[in-house]
Amino acid sequence: MSQVEVLKEVQSFTEEPKKMLINNEWVAASSGETFPVYNPATGAILAQVASGNEQDINMAVSAARKAFTGNDWHSMTPSNRGKLIWRLGDLIEQNLDELAQLESLDNGKPFSVARVADVPLAADLFRYMAGWATKIEGSTIPISTPNTAKSKHFAYTLREPVGVVGQIIPWNFPLLMAAWKLGPALATGCTIVLKPAEQTPLTALRLGELIVEAGFPAGVVNIVTGYGEAAGAPLAAHPDVDKIAFTGSTEVGKKIIDAAKGNLKKVTLELGGKSPNIIFGDANIKYATSAAANAIFFNHGQCCCAGSRLYIEKDIFEQVAEGVAARAKKIRLGAGMNQDTQMGPLVSDEQLNRVCSYLKSGLSEGAEALAGGKRHGEQGYFVEPTVLVKTKADMKVVQEEIFGPVVVAMPFDDMEEITSVANDTIYGLAAGIWTQDVSKAHRLAARIKAGTVWVNCYNVFDAAMPFGGYKQSGWGREMGEEALKLYTEVKSVCVQI
Ligand code: NAI
Ligand code: MG
Image 1 (tube, rainbow, N blue to C red):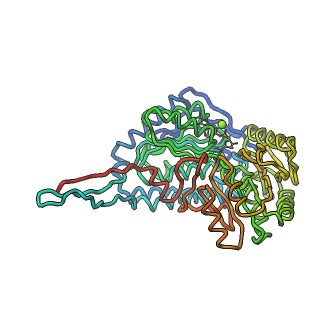
Image 2 (image 1 turned 30 degrees about the horizontal axis):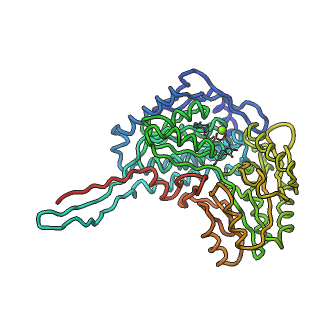
């Protein structure tokens, strides 16, 4: 398909108010209401989308329950389940350009990035999980009850799907986060109600069309669009939902835990971060400097694992901080659909205001901007890529997640100091270490309290590698075998033979 054809397809996709997917049917919100979705590069309305509420959630949950207990899904062989999930990966790949355009218009990220990262990673995640559908196994357990002529026990475990799952996702990687959540739930045989972020529901809805096209039975995947309070909260609180999986702010993560208490549903959370990226004097400085810029500026800093605290060993501090600032100044900002854009706008005016207020707070407390420091332009939600120096450990810009293209660069003296400051945060999602000394890298990796430690690399993701947080960065893991475990219950069966 040519660019023009794809653009036409995207336009026609967003023309009519978008409906929600319940029981494989596209339905308007029960209230009849819609909400606007904006193009963050211009602030113009991109589409109207069904505004779901508790009533819609109830319908979706009951469709998911029916699908979970019904024959179509329950009796499907693991092999056929795997084939369906694989087919979904194929369909994503076949619609690569369209999905990348939708993502770019809706979220603001460059089309070129969505095309090489978000969309192929989503396809890959489904294929990885498709392979697991046939490999979810229990074990036989040699228990120590008496073994006599009359009595002996045979014990084994079954791994069963946890049931109906609610999944609430954010706007920073809209399609990819849907894939991270749906993939393991489908592989294990759960059924799902997915609530995309109100800022960016469009690729999840297009994914819904592909899910129907792939041939998933009705009710296996339901997608309810709407605001967090109106649609997310009743999903988290629903008494017939067996598990809730959430990605977003730590603040809302805590609300999810409260909401889940009623029926003690299982909870997994992937929350905020303030990840340290640590460069030692013996690193490959040129490479580490450019990677440090990518670690914060990728996706405009809207990554839960962004390398937002850059710690640089004292003797190379100026060289590296200035190197990152020089790169920041060169980044070309623009609409995601412009071919030469390297960084798009933030996702919403809310995020623009949030990030600008952090900038003001840091600068007013004495931090200095080596690059950037303010909003870019008047139209759209653009922020200048920013490098702050001369910060103090207790400043908000050092302690709190900014979720924008803002890095604080700080010098450190030695291994002892860096271990303690790296861990001086309520978060524990990721960390980066740059050194050519292998022993130093392994020793520090072991001491950092974070779910992922990248050594001489950053932001490397793979469907097979678990991702998630220590401390207030969350509960549980996504991707890899670890994610699957969290979508299953283990049943011990003990038989007297
Ligand atoms: P948020 O946590 O409010 O939104 C994430 C998802 O939760 C959305 O789908 C939203 O509709 C839903 N939600 C909101 N309130 C809810 C509630 N009471 N019950 C159930 N669901 C609810 O995040 P927001 O406001 O978009 O961004 C605020 C900050 O959160 C960002 O500045 C960033 O620091 C952090 N964040 C972290 C993300 C991550 O990947 N860990 C992703 C997005 C935001
Ligand atoms: Mg919020």
